[in-house]
Amino acid sequence: MSVQEFLSIFISSVFIYNVILSRFLGLCPFVAISKNTKQAFAMSAAVTFVITASSVVTWIIYRFLLIPFNLTYLRTLSFVLVIATLVQLIEMVIRKTSPALYRAFGIYLTLITTNCAVLGVALLNIDMFFINDKAVIGSLYYSVFQGVCMGLGYTLAMLLMSGIRERLELCNVPRAFKDFPLAFIIASILSLSFMGFSGFKL
Image (tube, rainbow, N blue to C red; front, side, top):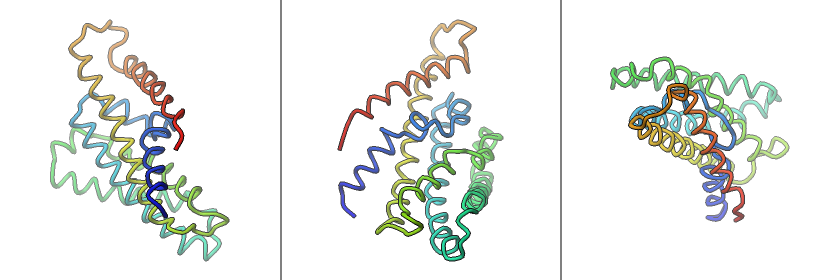
């Protein structure tokens, strides 16, 4: 383990292979929740927590349960169950602490369970930090750090999108482009701009 490796994970996770704008995972809340910056940030915080927590739990399950008992073919099923449990926990906490925020999220909070970004990061951690079903040195730390960085990349994309859409609310946008059509145009331009980061080499 070295600082350069962690820096490489940070840059690639946040900018080069951004979970939304480069890997195109988790697009549903990206388009639906990004009208308001406050809601976008709250959703990003919830997704980041779920991604980070699931990175830890799925690593432990894969390393100490699935590999020893030759059950690696069950990783997707077990990871989905872990993610669903974590989302239910967050949903209960938000409902108790902030009912208004819970109502604002609506069904999208529950949809974190099926958010492919969360499952995608968990599977990516296993593919990157396990070789021939053996954990590389420091793989748990790498997995957790990559989970945090993927969450930061998710947050960055959500805040960029919500900031642009909030400003466009003050503009005279043609009726045919309002809401989702314009959101997809913005998303495509943001995605194209993030492709420029793939030219940088560490």
